[in-house]
Image 1: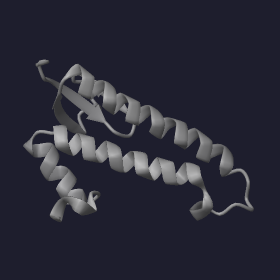
Image 2: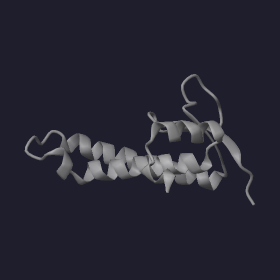
Image 3: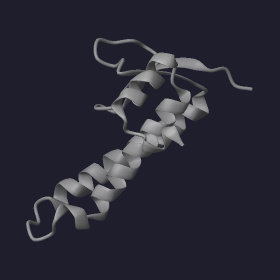
Image 4: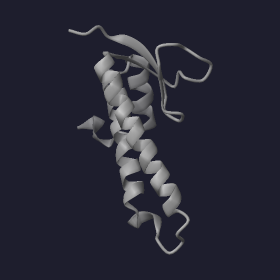
Length: 107
């Protein structure tokens, strides 16, 4: 079994780091390297969706709610929050619960 290490997460910048810097400690998780790589893949998909929605935003005739890239971005954020919650320490879990971004936590 792979050893879990502590990672500091900044969701805004999509940073995953074992080093603590001034702004990368929005959340703390304990993950194997494979789990951290899976989270990196989710962050990369969020970035790609964000870029696609940026270009789509310059087409004023297409409303937000009909944009697949925005839907993918939202789904990616939900997946990221789910992974961070599952891998998070107690403080991270409590913070995400208070944010109420995962509607299925009560189920």
